[in-house]
Structure formats: C-alpha cells, structure tokens
Image (cartoon, rainbow, N blue to C red; front, top):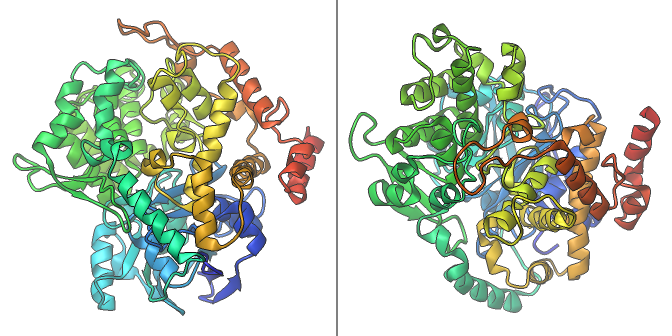
Length: 620
C-alpha cells in the first residue's frame, strides 16, 4: 500500500503478547485514518457498556494516510481514541509534533493497547521489534522527565515518546498524553485511560521509507502548499498565534469570564497575545514537515517563576486567565507549565479551578477546603495551589481531578449549576450565550464541550450570520464543518492549515489520491467525513447518550450576559436549542431523537451498524 503502512499492531499489556494484523483496506477508504480509523478500531475491539478505566477499554493510537510524508503539517499528527472517563462516550484527542511521523516510519497505521499490565511499563517500538519494558522508576515523573530518561536508557536522542504524568497515573479524568514535552493529546481524559493500563509511555523509532503513489505530482502539491503555508491564510499562527483571540473575543463580548459570570474581561490587555509576544515569547517552533511554525515558546525572564518555559495557546491562556479572573501572565505561564508537568489537560484544568472559585464565592466550599486561602476569582495563589493539588490528587484536588461534572456531584447542593460542561467535558473559550451557531456545534459535539469538532464559532465571530439569532439553516452549517473537521483529524493534517485548502474537500481528495493511489472523489471523501461523525454518534448511542445529552451548560441556558455592551441580556433558551437541534438532526437525516435512520446508514454503507439503532429502539 502507498501512504498507509498496511499494518495494525496489537499489544496485550496483561500477557505481554504482541502481534500484527493487516489493515482492512475497506476501512482505509471508509474511515481514512486518525480519529476515523481509530474509532472504528476501538468499536471492533470493545463491547458496549464497559467502564472507561477498566482493562476492557482498549486505547487506540492511530495515524493518517499522509503521516510520515513531507506534506506540510500532515507528516506529524497522531490521535488517541478510547471510551472517555470524562464523558462515558467516545473520546479522542489529537496531537502533533514528530511522534506520528516516527510511528509511521516504524511501519504501523495504528497500535491497539489491550488489557492492563500488572506493573508499570512502557512500550518500546523499534520497527518490527516490540517490547514491554519496566517503568517502575518512571512513576511520579513528568512527561518531560520521562522522555529524557527513556532516551538516555535507549541511547538514542531521536527516539520519539508519548507519556503521561502523575495525573494520568492517578487516573485523573482530565489527564492528557504529552509528546515533545509540551504537545498534548489533551481532551477527554485519554491520559487516565493510559494510566489505568499501567502504561507510562510509548517510545518509537522507525527507519522505513514512506512511499507515495504519485511522487512527482505529490511533490508539486507539496511545493504549492509550502508557499500557501507562508501566505495570509496562516499569518495569524505565524505571528501572535492563537493568543491573538484574547483581544478579538473580548471586544465582541464573547469570552467567558469568571466561570461564565461575565462575557468580557476588563483586564484583557494585560494578558493579550500582543503582551505575551512582547514580554515572554522567545522562539517559534514548527512540527515535522510544517512551514508554518506556530508553536510559541515562552519563558518567564524574572520574578518568582523565572526560567519557567512552556508553550501557550489561546484556550489555555483563556482558561487560566480570564476564566479564573487572573490577569498576571507569569502566573498563567507557570500554571501551564504545571499542567505539562502533571500531564493535565490545561483547558479543563482552568475550568475546574474557576468552578472551585465559583463554589467558594457561593459558599459551597470553605476557606478550610483551600488550606486557608481566600479562593476568590483573581487569586493567583489559588490557581497554582489547586493545579498542584489536582495533579497529585491531594486535599480538594482529589475531588477536582474528577472534572467539574463529577466534582459537582460530590460537592452537592447547587454546585451542578456552576459546573460548566457538556457531556462531562469542560467548556472552552467561547461564550455560547451570544454565539448561537457555536452553541449548536458545542451541544451536538460527540466528544462534549469542544470547539475542535466543528469550528462553528467562526460563523458567529466573523459576522457571517447573526450570532444572536437561532434559526433554521444553522444545522447545515454545523454539519458541513463537522464533516470537514473529521476529515482533517483523520487524514491527519493540522487545523491551523485549514485555510490553505482553497478548494476545500477537493484539495483533500487530491492529496489523498496522490499519496495512496486509491481513487477518491470529493463526494466520496465528503461522505467519509459524514460516516466518521455518524460512527461517533452510533458509539455514543450504544454507550447510553441521547438527545438529552445534546445540551448546554446551565448558565448558558439560564443566566443572561450581564455586561454592558452589544450582547447584554443574551442567552440560549430551551426553545431555541430545541429548534437548532431539530434543524441539525434534519440536516443529517437523523430522527428527532438524534438517532441516524436506517436509510442514512444504508446510504453511508454502514448497514452492519444498524443493530445499534435497532437495539436502541427496542429499549425505548
């Protein structure tokens, strides 16, 4: 095969047995790779109703057909897929760097980790050689420390490693998996799944060539896109990066602040992308095969956190800044470093801390719970303390490490109203009360409250629609973007490069054809995107999720924006949400309960999965 390695590696962590199976070529075309292939492999290797933290929950590491090539941004990505301990539905997280390239060169399209090791191990994949090595000495180490130790042990600096930190070891439901020291497969708790298997890290070295079907035409496309990557479509990422969004969203009053108590942060200028770039950014780094170089490395030059080094994006800057009411960049940068050290999803971490602050201000948690600190919004000491407690699961951190939904259940009283999540996954930096296309995208997202499954906020923020209006037609907008995003994360290419695909799916289909030699029309590739989202929906239905889970955080539905400005008083009513959901389901040709029809499954060549729908209808 071209592009695809053609092999799936199975690792039984309980027995230590490993084996290889051939990639199903029908799956390759139907589900592409990345999250699409990963979800299908997870489905085939699991059963309904398993506990996410049990040995029966397989962890799938999957690549795209373009992985390992020199196509801009496409050579480096990888995804992890499993049942999410945060949402109890399908979970997936994508990361970039160099890890994915190395795994493809080792000769695999995916690795499926089954069972649980009796003792901590790391898996060492050296082309055809696969070993389970003792990781007892790595317990308690950060992903960065783990990476350095393993490289020294194996005697090769160029070995690539994905690892968990203490949060994953302690089964925090907001734990992530990190490669290249700062690049996280962040959301849905995949680090906890890895920790539940006593799997500390995966180390890879590959020496095989990656062959493409049509090398001359492929190189022409590489050169063309290399130039596109240096053009206006990616200028934002090459200059200020995503932190530019701080001032953009703040000016539109669509940046959730202090746990959705506001939509505008009065001190945004103190933590803006401009201020970050001026005082802290020291280097821009690119992933393997990327001409964009979007990774903004920041270093604190002075003060109590002098020397702290990490990378910053808008979402993490927002979560530990405005969302917690904090306007000190050095504190936020230190918070980001702590998340990397413990292996925590920094978005969820900031949202959890803000939730705890809101609980304190509403009398649901006491000063004693915070070891004597006044846990008001804006208290930077509380942010640092809580991140350390969450990472180690000490004190109140043991509760908060469960994420806001389960933490609220344990705290009780009115805490559920302060827990801003969808399907158990913490919100991201878009105030859904005044971004109603985005609100729909977030509500129906198969992995919960996340912007990276649909990008629907762009229609609202860029003024392409009336962002304060819920109306028919928004369902199609969300559906089409969901399908494109599913393809992006299945090929796998970087979402920051999406603007360089001037012809949209047609460009993606051309790339797929040149690399794999498998004929794929634009319509067929679009159908694959729809199939991937439908598969995710079916898995969630199998795991017990339904229309009632396609909802919005309590404050979005009940607390109007209080800030004086263009969106004062905005919120989403249940009537508006129901209208949007009906419109979305209709656009997908699902029934009004959000269940794909048998006719739709037949159209997508997914008839064997109709049993999930049939079983659901029998239960009802």
